[in-house]
Image (cartoon, rainbow, N blue to C red; front, side, top):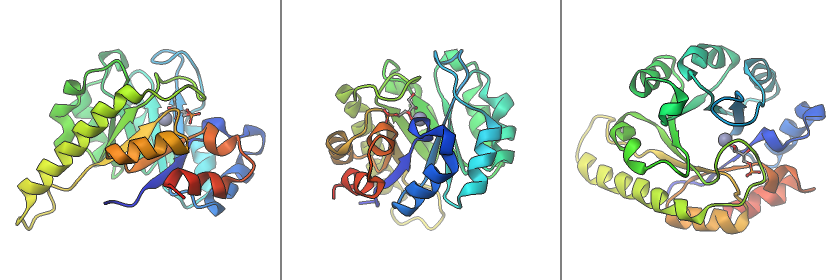
Length: 230
Ligand code: DX5
Ligand code: ZN
């Protein structure tokens, strides 16, 4: 099984000392830094934009995992690339107002890892046509917009389907020598704590985004260890 990666979401960090917060989670064993970008249109909240991502980039060498909860993401992708994103994830819902296929290709062309995500209310069928051209599927386990919401266990069905797709992919690629056919990362985001992390991993997730359960504790190293299962 792939190593479980932990991506603290700085949405829950103390922004008045963001540099220190990033240093602390890095020292505590974080694998990526998750940056939640919200525009007040696609989701009912506004967070921060490329200039903060650029600031984060200067504080750490860890990969920056940028989650765009915005309309017209294609227009903003180049700015997040310039700011130092390593992976960029966009939403599949029509309300995100983008051409999904073109935007995934745009991210690929910019040498970032390509992520796609769907809200709890969105049918898995919408992401299926794109699975063979992404590096990561993010399964939202809360309706996006705010940290600190309870985990939606009903979303594990989607994690299982993504894991099953990875398995069938493995079979298809067996014996092939080119690099196609690799597994996609399965990331979960929202309400992730040690209990819900265990459930998510059991169902096939290998990347855990967590805000509250890391930044609202005193011991980040313990919080990250506990998410990985101790
Ligand atoms: C939800 C964001 C999440 C959120 C997670 O809108 O995409 O990344 O910050 O926060 P917690 O871990 O507090 O649910
Ligand atoms: Zn997120």
